[in-house]
Length: 86
Image (cartoon, rainbow, N blue to C red; front, side):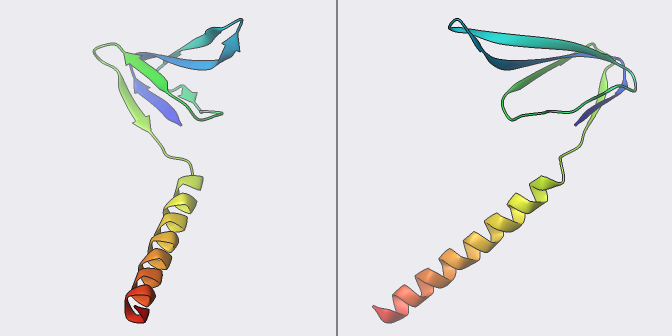
């Protein structure tokens, strides 16, 4: 989620393909407006000199951090067992 604290920004995102061409959507946001990403992908954010933004990560990011930590510890344990067995 991107919240414009002050100033003005333009957010551009490629939303898909039409006849072999990328379809790009631009949205203008001014102070106190919010934009929420509905899908993954690259986003361009261009602001004027006085633009100030707050970028807030979604809650599901913490899930992937936890999943990555679990996977990392599982791999470490598997390596330890493999070394002790060999």
